[in-house]
Length: 430
Image (cartoon, rainbow, N blue to C red; front, side, top):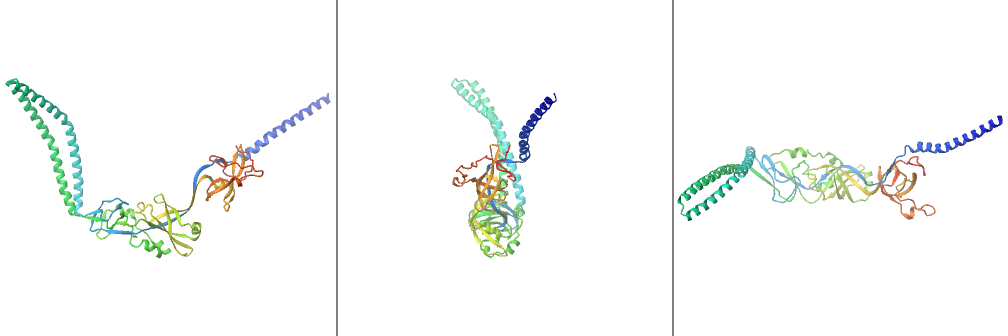
């Protein structure tokens, strides 16, 4: 009896051990998967673009000629800011102090004329139906007179004539009432003409001496900041240039005799001038043609390096010539720009998702998620900056494993590991 009990105990112990063993086989991998997989972040490959650029403050240098005011007074702009004008065009008018009251009266008269015209239109619409009815009745009664005359009915003709006289009188009354608004409008227009002549006698036109871009933004740098000045610029005098507040000047409509009120930007190009240190110049390399983003107007333009000074205290003065956005920049002097050294677009991923980065040969690896496991795949770097990279598949001749089996290709919406640190080849990923 004791032997049977021991035998049953051993059988149960053996079955228990098997159950524990099976449990551990199933549980431990799941536990490990839970521990190591819970912080794995994945994303999908998307299309995007990156650029390498240098942000810098700059000056706009251009050939421009100021127009002085012919008298004291108020500026009335006849041309829009940044508009192209021809030589001989009137770009603005200066009204003297005596004209200020006339202008206010002119505005009041314009409003009165508009209101009178509205009232006249209402009256015309109101009486137009009555006049049509009267005309129809007059025509009907004229026909009756003709018929009665042919019949020699004297009494009938007399009666109809009386009705016809009443209709003609009514029409004349309505016509007289309609003529009153016309006379009022004519009188207002005559007053306006007299005022306009008075204003014309007290105004002086500002005429463009040359063709170009008109601007009413005067910053005080027009007299010295031109193309000829670029070669003579130094680090010190560039730093000392402080343009006036052009927004304030443009809002001020008061003109002072012999002081600038407008300027003409001549030519078809201008220069973006800036100071760049030696390291940034090395990043530009031998590039002559560059793209520049003018952040003040959020516009990308192209240009070429026209001037590069000798090194001065580890810095250079650079001038880029461009013929783009001439009107848009007419009000600007000090600007902030991005000098775009390189640009590319394609499959975009964060740099932190790449391993084995080789910027010399422009290669790296990325952890793709395939069938729930991580697979590190070599890729080609099309472009790279501090945060992102544009990637592509390796050439087929360079992308084969031992035995000639090709690596999987990267494509749009491929799933990848965002941060491959401590991630191993073949590791399970949810």
